Image: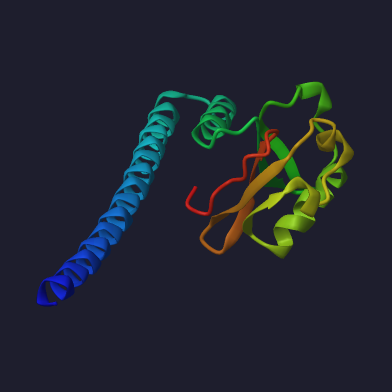
Length: 171
């Protein structure tokens, strides 16, 4: 009888330890993936900083930074919208033909309205009203962040993926 009790007790303890081991392995795998993503982002950010330090004129700097940010976040489209006296204007772009870009601030009102509701966010393209010139590119997932200097808004970064791969909160 005592042997049976010990076997049941040892079996239960072994099962418990096996479950704990499996849970720890899953956590370790998750942390390794998180660390790899963080390292990739840090590497890309250092590349963006290096590029910004090597480009001499503002227009080239904005253009190159937009490309680097698109690559950093695996985006198909990146738009850097900066404040002007008339409202937002596209100053940097990646993945959109220059001939498709709006020339008037009124063509950016949908984007401006979405950013006014939430200064930063991620969403499916179905959840956000996009202007027709941008909707034609088949966006599936969006991420945006308002850009500021002190308490003053200076613009907006909009990133778009055409694949149905959502942006993550930790991106």
